[in-house]
Amino acid sequence: MTKTKLFIIPISFFCAFSHAQTGNVGINTKTPRVKTDVAGTYRSGKIISGTTPAITAAQKDRYLLLIHSATDNTVKRINPVQANAPGIASLITFRLTNVNRDWVEGFNTRINSSNYSLMVLSAYFDRDLIGSAIAVPTYGVKNNPSTSEWIIYADYSDINTTTNGTWNIVCAVYPKTYVKIFPEHGPFDLNNAASGTDTSPILQ
Image (cartoon, rainbow, N blue to C red; front, side, top):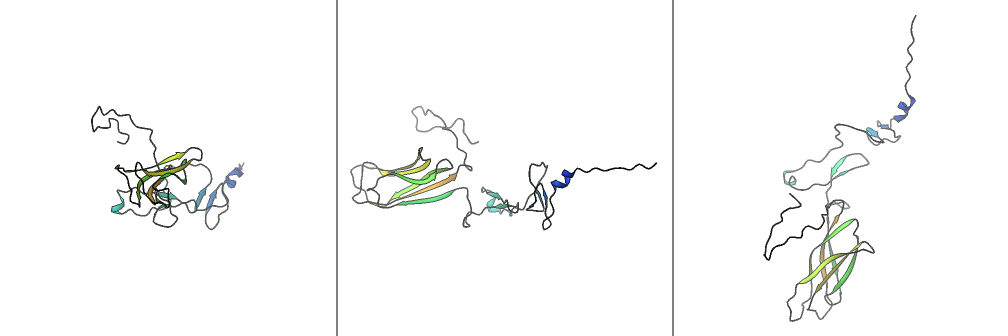
């Protein structure tokens, strides 16, 4: 007596694979973007996706930023020089003209302080200042907690100018996703000395 073997293949197996589109195969998706496109979670011991441009000898000691394309699943190196390309940081010069003599109490940069860190690198004023005191410029940045925006300020204390001038304030802006923000470090008691050493450095 001949036995007939009956093979039952779950229909869900076929439903998991979509029909091929231009040679692409999708798992749990009807619109595969690449040769094999998996919609959902998966596990693999080794995945090589896309290609990364070769790194030159001069670039080996530099921090490189990579981006993953959701369109073709490739990995590319970002070139900040290109228009509209992202970068790790942005350098911006705020040119504030016709200020009240040399005093900038607060200029709203409209840069979101929740998403970005802002640092004033340098600032210079374009007018001669008069007064008997010797002063250096005071400038910096502060957060406006009510709007979550960065405010920059600048001033020469105890001296002034006879006409309204111009401040050029150079800032660096870092997305907080790229920046590690440490809590306040210290305090360190220098014991009436002019120098000291961090006994527990944050970065080793």
